[in-house]
Every structure is written in C-alpha cells, then in structure tokens.
Image: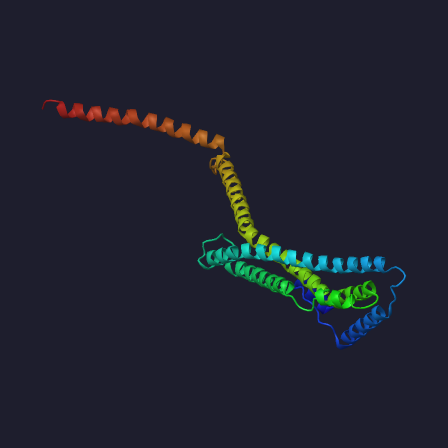
Length: 276
C-alpha cells in the first residue's frame, strides 16, 4: 500500500487529474461530440428521441440524488455543531470524565476536521456549474429544420454528454462527504466512550485493590490465630537424682539444726532465771 492510499484511508480526498488524464478526457469528449453529430436517426426518429431523453433523465436523476444527499448531510452537520461546541466547552472547563484532557482534545480536533471537510464537499456538491440541458431555443431551432426529431435527439444527447463531467463531479464529492461523515461519526463515538471506558478501568482497579487488601488482611489474621510454640524449661547441670538427693540432705540438715538452737536458747533462759 502506497503512502497516498494510506493517506486516503485516513483522510479521503479527491485526487486531481494529471495533465495526461485531462488530455485524454478532452479527446474522449471531442470524439463523443463528433460521433453524435455524425449519427443518423432517420430510420426511427421517435425511438431515438425516447432513448436520448432516457439518457438525459438518468443524468438528471444522478444530479438530483447527489444534491438531495448533500442537503441531508448538511442537516446532519448542522446538528453536530452544537455537540462539538458542548464537548469543547466541557473539555476546556474540565467538567467531563476522568479521561486525559489531551486525548479528548485530540480526538475532538480530528472529529472537527472531518466535519469541516464533509461540509466543504457537501457545499461543493450543491454548486451548480457546467450542467447543460435542452431549452426552448433548442426545440425551436429543431423545428425549423426538415428533420426536427433528429435535430432534437442530437441536441438532447449533446447536452447529456457535456453535462456528464459536472454530474460525475457531484457524485464524487458526495462520496467524499459520506466518507468524511463516517469518520466523524466514528471519532465522536470514540470521544463519547472515553469517559465510560476510563471509569470502568478505574472501577476494576479499585475492586482488584480491595480484593487484594482483603486477602492480605485475612492472611495476617490467620497467622495471628495460630498457636505459638512454647519454649522448653531450662535444664540444670545436675541430673534429676542428684538434685533430689541434695535437696533431701539440705532439708534433713536444717531440721536437725533447728532443735539444737531452740534447746540452747531454753537453757540460756533457765540459767538467767535461777536465783542467786
């Protein structure tokens, strides 16, 4: 895909004709005019006139269809202008959602460019230029000849052929208008969906954060509720038998010593109380 095709896919535009294409187009027009003037319609002039009018009517219908679509598209564009103004004011005043302001302004600028391009091509479609048709003067001139139907047939075909370029330009411009409107609609949909998308992403993040915090808290509580391991009692350097024998010996020694002290005290008291 070339660069121009990529650009046309992003921003549709009407490529101007090259010099060679213009030359070929002029030659085709000249050859068609010469063929119409050299044609003979004497065998069945009524049928020839009907066919010529059918061709002219088809070209007129193509032009009317393009102009009708251009009018409809302009009405849609007129309805989009207040939306653009409202979105721009909300973005500048930061009264919209959590989407980044730079992103919203960029998309709004792109949508505005598409709307402006669609309006330009729609107005150019309604522009009347280069369209020809059979008028009263042509009919009067035809009936001044000996073969009025043949002359009128030629006049109708010449007017239709010379108007084809203008009709083709209208159809091309209305196609460009349609392409720009489709892209503008997509840009507006994207712009309007930014805030809900960012709201949704923020809500999902909050839910995930709350769930993670609750999980961590439950794990901490479960660890606190587990029984703590008890430390074993300190061991003595002596064995259990040695400790018991030592304790029993000390207790027996104390029990033997206490009566001696009490008896000694009593003897002293008795000695002190004897009369002299």
